[in-house]
Length: 151
Image (cartoon, rainbow, N blue to C red):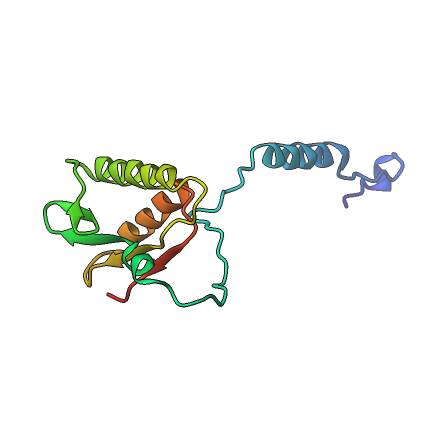
């Protein structure tokens, strides 16, 4: 802290820093950041339950599976097929919308009954983003019984 010389005929006076404006600015910055914070939502969140021990499935139950093949094709992006039937759509978004509509239709058809398991079968060279997008579509269609095959 600076002091003026007493030899100038003045009393020694302390010059200090004023803290009140600095504290005001800090509080304003704090309020600004608190108000502007945006929390991220969880992506790809599915309700997962461990399987329960049950009786052996019948032959008819074994046939009821929904297998979604996810293949990455050079130049075309992703190719989706449900039970070996390719889904239509020129763009990636249209293909995933078609998958969503198909899954919604299956869910409506099984109203009140247990849905068959949905099995996602990724290709060996398929990027994870296509598999995660497929999983997100299953979550959006409120499908809870989702399994994966090993590529």
